[in-house]
Image (cartoon, rainbow, N blue to C red; front, side, top):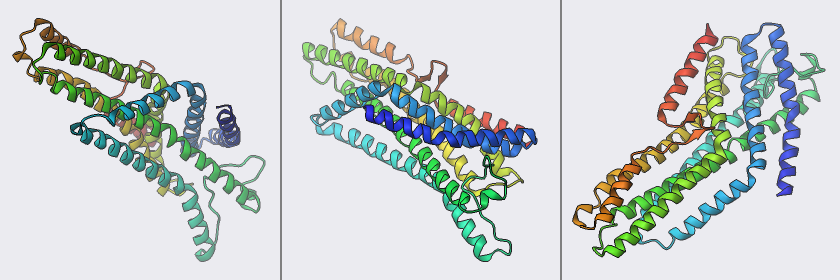
Length: 362
């Protein structure tokens, strides 16, 4: 683990120059009252800051993450011994996890590569076909100790292009590894809920009272384990959740302002991809957490429809009533105990981001 911590520390140190460069560029933009380009640099700075935050959280939460992943591995080991009727539910979750992971990696890769690829293509095209050929930087920024003309000269231009591409790679890794782990964890929690909900459907199949009581005890144990897993996920990802909330609110509005800006310092096509990626980035956790809330709420209907009326034992009937009452209390994931993640939050973020966009455009 010490080796991983040192590697993360080295990565953080290597991208600090990018942050310093962005700060210096933003300072100059403020002095010249260049708000559009100040916003443009803020977008990249926020993304870099968020990546560094996730790298630091990886170090501080390493034990919790390991325990979380070990628990998920143990759960999937137990799922191998379940009856065949449970396999479609498990396979569906596994396929969904793989699909979402691949989709997010593809979107992140396309968005990240748009910076160096478009800059390279535009530079080559300009050198071959333009009457006044010019070079395009991976991300247009004022480089300290260099004039505007010098930064396009060799070897400064090539060195900065390599370093900028490396920074883009770090951002790509930062927005896939940590975020992908959340998808795995939250879908595992959703699967656990679906499985013990399936158990609840058949809990009254055997009329033997002791057997039903044993099944109810197992259900309560599984329910507590699922709730404990949700709490562990919230503990591990609380800072990340508040981070993607703030990132989405700020980035969508600012990126939209770059799309609509008439002052095109950068290649504008990349901002379209950036807007789409940021919207999906906040949509996925809102959707997945809302799915967990929905599955927990389904327990009330499942418990009510499990043929409890055919059982005369008062204790079992009271247990079913308690399950129904407990299931009617919604289960939510909150970022630092403040922001509740659901589809309503996603809608609210889009509305707030659009308000920011209109403010920046006015």
